[in-house]
Every structure is written in C-alpha cells, then in structure tokens.
Image (spheres, rainbow, N blue to C red):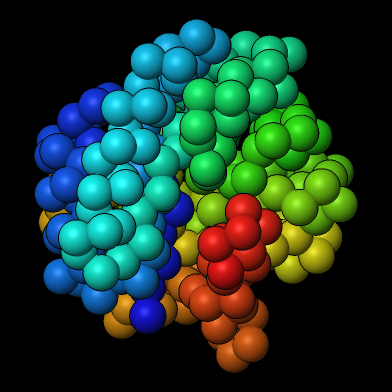
Length: 220
C-alpha cells in the first residue's frame, strides 16, 4: 500500500510519459499517485489539461488512482497563492510547492508563503523549516514532505522534528524523475525510519496522511 504525491513526467523535467509513470507506479505497488509537473505563474493552464487527460486514462486502465497536480517552482513568494489558485482553476488536484531545500537557492520566504497560502497541499523538501512555519503548516493543513531524493533528503531529520513539535502532518514522497526512483513500500518505510519516524507516526506518514489528503479532495 503505497502513495506518492510528488512525481514528474516529461511534460516538465521527468524522463517518462505520464502513462509510463503511472504504470510503473502500479508495478511498484502504489495505490495512488499524483503527477506534479513543474509550473510557474501562467503555464499551468497549458500543462494541467494535458496531464489530466493522461491521468484519467491511467486511472481507468491501470488499476490505481492517478491525479494531476503541479509543483510550483521558484514562484516569487508573494505570488504563490495566486499561482496555486491558477493551477486549481486549470484542473490541478494536488498543489505542492518546491520548498527551501538545502540543495539549491530557492527564494527566501518560499516556505513561509507556501504554508500560509490557500490552495497549497504540500510543502516539498522544506529544508531547515522554522518552528513558526511548521506551526503555520499545522494550522493550515499543509503537509510537510519527507523526501527520498538525494540532496533534497539532507534535512529530513530536521523536518520530522519540526513537524512533530508543531503537530504538522508528514508525507513520504519520492520526487520521481525517472521510474526507478519510485519507492516500494519497504523502501518508503526505510526512508521514514531513517528520518526518525517510528510506530504510529511512521504509519501516519505512510498511510493515514495520504488518505487524509485524498479525502480532502473527495478521493478517499
């Protein structure tokens, strides 16, 4: 039983067609995935309708739920809310924001804006997220990501501690760009445990939180 809300296809910078991403996820034991290709301020209106058609076909044909989404990437912090709303109007089900990872110079203030913007579901790889921003994520229902991607995963332990201290919910995502990056359930459990999760908290990140996110969008 595996869920992943952060994957990419060749509609942005992934290596594979959305249908291949979906089929490979099914083969790896996934129950549901979001394909969240990169978007900025205006391109969601072109990207998401194309992606949505492929996700619909995959859901009908492959026996798993595949939903279209976006990863808002390097959007100026003050415009993240508007970009999230535009993505939703275009048909994005899941909206995630490329957080202030330790792997690269994401605009300062991205984390703070993302966890306070209406329409954002997930703050991806948020790096050294502050206590205040983790608390805002908890209060606004924004999930924080534990990432399996090399370099983005450097702050996983900090993210877990910040989330647990604030009461924010966590998800374990792959940030898949090639099908080989998709996580088996066993591997996802290892990533979660390596980040400091155990017991009920680990199960929440792997199962309860994904189900809660799907239910938010009427898909539970």
